[in-house]
Amino acid sequence: MAIKYTLQGMLIYLTIAAYLLAFITTVTGRRKLGHGLFLGGFFLALLAYIYRWVHVQHVPLQNLFEVFLSLGVACYPISLLCRKYLRIGGQWAEMLIGALVLFPAGFVFHAEPQRLPPALQSWLFAPHVAVYMLSYVFMAMAAFRAFEQLLTKPNPQRTTLAPEQATYELVVIGFPLLTLGLILGSIWGKLAWGDYWGWDPKELWSLVSWLVYLGYFHWRYMFGKKHPRINSLWALVGMAAIVITLLWVNLSRLFSGLHSYAT
Amino acid sequence: MNRLKRPVMWAALVAIILLAGFSIYGAFIGADQAKTFFNSIPLGVYWGFLALLLIVGIVLFRRLLRTPSLLLMHLGCILVLAGGMWGSESGHALQKRLFGTDAIIKGQMPIYEGLQENRVQLGDPNDLRELPFLIRLRDFQVEYYEPGTLWIYDQSGQSWKLPAKAGDTRTLPGNLGKVTVLKVFKNFRMTLEGDEQVAFDAPGGSNPTVQVRVETPDGEEASRYVFADFPGHPRPEDPLTMRYHRMESDYISKLEVVKDDKVVASKDIEVNHPLHYGGYHFYQYEWGRNEYGEYTVLMVVSDSGLTVVYAGYAMLLVSMFWHFLGPRLFAAATNRRKAPGESSAQPSDKQSQYQ
Image (cartoon, rainbow over all chains, first blue to last red; front, side, top):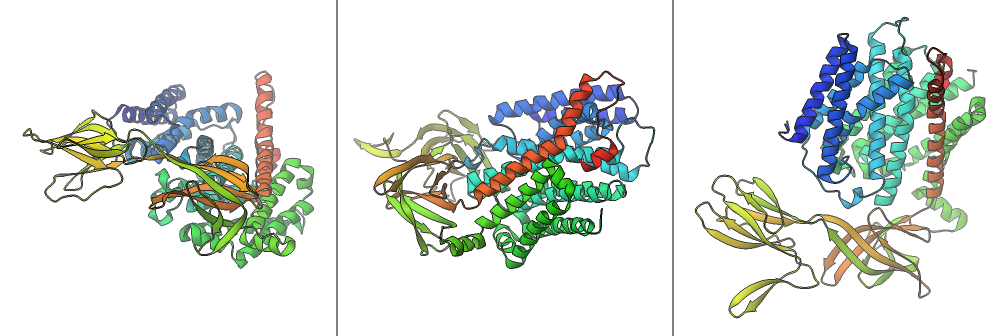
């Protein structure tokens, strides 16, 4: 446990509280209040992120504390975008995702500022990590809809997309971003380490995540919505691979490799 | 889906799942063994099968030929595979057999400041190959973040850190006292002025040192020097041990490429900024200092197949954003222009199944 008795920590805890309250009020039917709390939480998260940026004097995407903080900021705008333009409902999921991703930033990872080692001083550092984080938020949202699809019965009354279709729409947006993250990482690897592909555990797990979603598209092309539960399972397996890529590879000594500095 | 297409789709799905499985296995065995595994003969067969499957898919599925974005996506994958195979060890062996080119796949090149070199060490330091040109190291520099950090340890191993900046102070818990940074030297030297030893910063050279004062709670004061390059040994009677650490911010090798006694290219290479010349990339890899002086170690990597891989990347990215995001951005834009209540431009379920 790494409880932070700092302004940074307080901002994170307030954001978690706002996101959780937003979730509770939304699922209990007070949607407007829920949305207001979600928006308030987003501004707090944004403030925490800007504060961190000023503090460390580089884009705060270097370690897992900063990565989870950035995920907490990205939830609200992506949720809003999906609701407005993709007819994807269930904003409660993003409120919960926001609180869940900020939990490790608030309670697990240390916030000790770190200087950038020479390998991270590249123009590709920020886009590579930021694009991955964006895609992870989309894929987490897709996983929640897939979970919803597995647990609930179809509701013909709903005005937003059905969970299976919503999962697909979210994966469709997340997948090109995931590909961009992978390719930017590969180009960066070539510039920094001499290899565009080094067979490093983190690279291999990120390839696994990409392949699972690739499999999802091929499966859905073959069967469409004939097996909605299997479609959802693909999205959930993809999310599991992302969690392993993001966390396990960095934390476990089992997979030590070139990306181990990003803990 | 007809009788021929369905097995091809199943084969594609199995190939994807297999590659995911191989990758998980590769992640468990570590990068070096994974590289050997993915370059082994059975995996070579797999890569060939995958490339063939992609080609068969393009020929068989009219939809791929009719939809440029989908075609580009699959062609992109073929190019990445082809470029990867061309640049692999087997690919280099094939190039040697077909065209007689014998490029160095990967190696290291230590060069001392002011000297030039064309020998590249392969895996074993005695296994040397020569480049058709020379690389001269004009100068080598290491840059550090300022200020450095003074680490203070007590006998139980607990540690505190203090920026190595003159005037900075840290009060330690219990009766350990207070540590103050008095002066920071870039190149510490001592001289005798009369009977007294005087420390001074000599121009040039490098011997980073911090002078600190330790004050105990009962008023005793002692001054000591902490050297970055000579950490020294902790003494059992000393309650505090100190280390002066400076973090490297950059390594710069100023290189010149010499061919037929003429300088044909030059570049100051750093991490993330290699030199590209004659079919090779030269990377800042390591550095060191010994009795002969300061030296840099360059990593030399053949660029064979790289253009093809990058072309594949470009095709993959363009096609994916075009295919997946294009229709949705268009739908979002047209929805904004329409009045509320008009039909949505969101792709229908049947359409979106294939988009």
